[in-house]
Length: 305
Ligand SMILES: [Cu+2]
Image: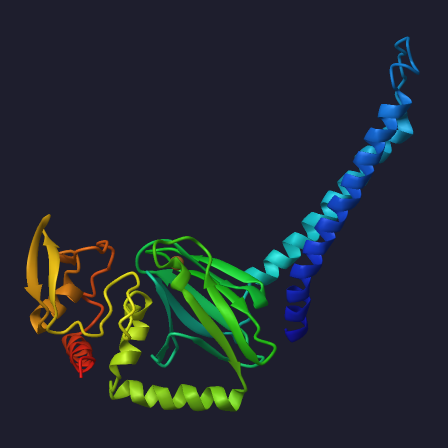
């Protein structure tokens, strides 16, 4: 199994270089032949048109050689594709949810994370979906990429075969915050991984979630900062008690940010849109519980102190 995978990951690069190599050789051959014929059959040298008879041997060569080349490229491409579409039985399943504009990873024990933590040398199967628009998950170092499609599950698998932190991107333009859809794959030693996996699992049971983790997991921090910097949406810092102009049903009005306003902004983000910002926030209805909303509101209040 392991050997299979190594074959596969190196195959991606090997097939790539094989196809590029064949293409370069063909390009060079065609260019040289073209220049050669331009000179050889130049009009000055051949004032009278001549009928050139066919050449059976040449014709056989130019049919057989390209056919073999195409079959070689197809075979390696197909073998690599088969390996990539067939996750090993013992692969660790992790559900991936993409949304504007963050990733969240859910493990078998219910544990959630906004970075993909995986143990070394254990195949991982990612089951991918999207809550809103098309996104695409891309982990360049493991040579895997798969679309995240709303209402549908797609998958990919890879073998994390070296320790370290690697980039994970959204590679399909999905709106204003697309650039913020960056996460990490942390390949840990199995001991370190299971320590994290089991400890966080217990915390998950008692639902003791810190506001920051909650906001990170639900993508709030993809657009809102906690330090006053304005990004896609208003910053949370200094927000509570602030008097602000909002657009309600196309009309401007002035509101004071209080608990009720914050809650409404999470559940019906399009109802009162802060002037100067686009109405692009997804509703957190059915996403955040009342308790979670309260935790976040308390956090935003505390940010003023
Ligand atoms: Cu995206």
